[in-house]
Length: 225
Image (cartoon, rainbow, N blue to C red; front, side, top):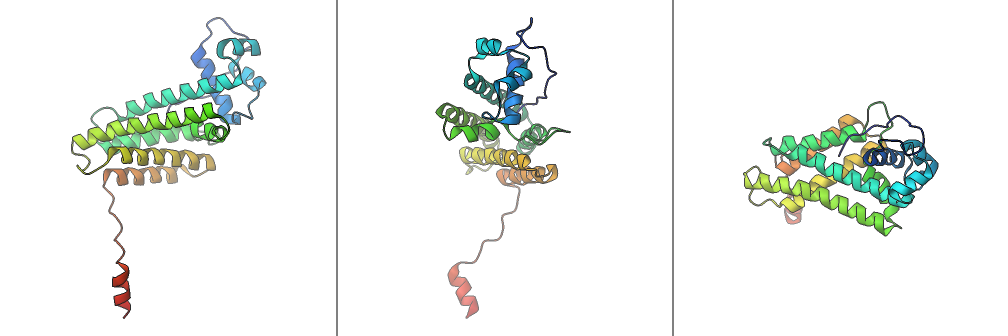
């Protein structure tokens, strides 16, 4: 997760003081808005303030530029998650901070809901593009691992039961992140999304009461007799 807003348009070219990270940030926003297939080279030039030869010289073709934006997003997301999960806060507070930060990105104030850049754009392209599919799986795996490390620490410190499985709990934590990303893009409300995240955190941390177990079939049959 990481924040980012559209930068002001600059004159095309490769101006003095060119910043490759900023150019990737701007290209990412263009892909985020239009998707990979729907984003033209002219749109990328407008977004970055760089003409086509400059874009090619800095990043290669459109496909290579897109892969670079995925790499940047995944890495910044990893850094943001690790920062949110660091420190001595309770596990529930740390997890909720990850989801709150994600929602701030997925639902930028005053803008159309945009969800997660990785999921929102790479899932579509991954069907026919093996390189994008690898980036997508790699990014999801990295986020799983970040959650897993924090959950391992929580288990060692007694916040989670000795029988808990940090690997599976990390996948659940990631699944919550994926769900609120998709639902935010679909127009679900911030209150509903945050409630979903809170319920997921309670489930992971074992603080939500489980529903009563259904009686076995034999018991139901006997009760009717």
